[in-house]
Image 1 (spheres, helix red, strand yellow):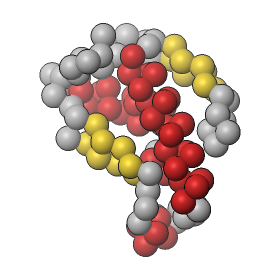
Image 2: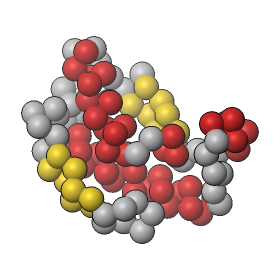
Image 3: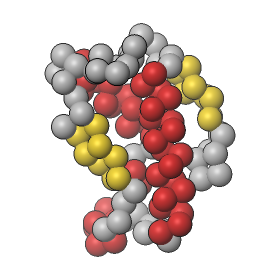
Image 4: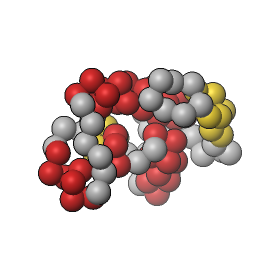
Length: 100
């Protein structure tokens, strides 16, 4: 099981890391993603702690990006909190249950 705060990694990087762990574990990864509610942890890592509304907005977009990348080989995403980008996985799709 891998659980992380959305504000610590870009969603595309997180998806790539999750796929790598999923492959190493032979498809046993369970990924958990949170919006990031613990301000002292952000301070400790030197990451700006944002308002609840902004955290939730970023979280919603991150879930869309991660889910799309785990299900598709190429994803284009333009959000209000995540910069426009096209992300591509070359033969690196998840082996986990529920993913092709």
